[in-house]
Amino acid sequence: MKMKMVILAVAMAMTCSLQAATKTPAQQLLERLQKLQKKGYMYGHQDDPFYGLTWDWDLGRSDTKELVGDYPAVMGFDLGGIEMGDAKNLDSVPFQRIHEEIIAHHQRGGIITISWHPRNPLLGTTAWIQNDTTAYNEAVAALKKIGQDALAKQVIDPKTTVKSILPGGSHHAKYMGWLKRVADFLLTLKDAKGNPIPVIFRPYHENNGSWFWWGQNLCSDEEFHALWNMTQDYINNVLPTNLLWSYSPNLQGNWTEEAWLKRYPGDDRIDLIGEDAYQWGTEADFVTSLNADLALITSIAQQHGKLIALTECGYQNSPDATWWQRVFKPVIEQYPVCYFLPWRNYKKDHFGAALQTTTADDFKAWAQQKNFMFNNDIKKIK
Ligand code: BMA
Image (spheres, rainbow, N blue to C red):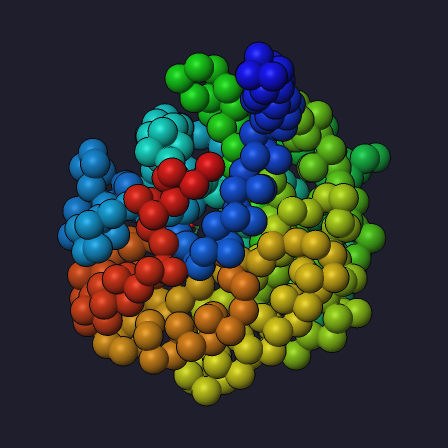
């Protein structure tokens, strides 16, 4: 009898480890996020280990650690510039350092998310389109005014960018080369045993705004879907096991479910429903819009079996000492937000999580709360 029980226990243990072994790193991360979401919400921060309000590039430093004694649970990194083969990203962070910090954060039990602000493949300008649209409209108007209609037709319309990189487009081959560079970088992310490091990948974010070349007024729904699918299919083919895909529109405040779903890539393509939500205007408007959007994406996420997160958020350069706990916390605590991620602490006049300034005490007090999780709170939860 005793022997039988031992055999049974061994068999059960083997089945469990076999099941664990057959789960991809991406599936393991997804299950980990689901577990963590039940315990509370995690703190994420963009570019956390590279620079802060008063320092640049020191190894081991982190504004978060210096304030609350621990690294963020989630660290965000951006690949903008990798498509050009650049050595540094759009914010001057060397890709080699990004590679090292991703591995270091994974080793300390943290979670990694990667965004990408690719340059405009058609115009050669940055990911941001605002000035290009203005420049385009002005150039066309000026040429027409002097009767040069034929020349006006030759000015490149930024709205043709997405079309130009889809199959059959003039810049398709070039863009596939860009995707290869992204995939090549992601392929270098391996742990000490050579296993791929799981990553939450968040391309083509804030696509309901029209400030990036993939934005709402810059391409049709069909073109956006084709862009997403082409990107995802190519990258997943190279990296089939370690990416979770996050779809992250921007704070809007007046979505209908139908409108929100129009550019949603689909349940088979998305693991995490994100939203980027900054307070740019009044506090009242921000709270109203954030509540509306979080209520909607919570409902969509529940119907579609997805997690939600605030993939970028905060009050940039906040002068308000009480903002985190008075304004932000009461809203997010009503929804199953898995993590929230303020943007980089670049300089005194451009920071996402002002941890050394006015808001420090408020944030530090909040960080004591048990369900607000940093790296040490999550590292043992696998
Ligand atoms: C924006 C700003 C820019 C930066 C970009 C990508 O919000 O921080 O300075 O280049 O994000 O990180």
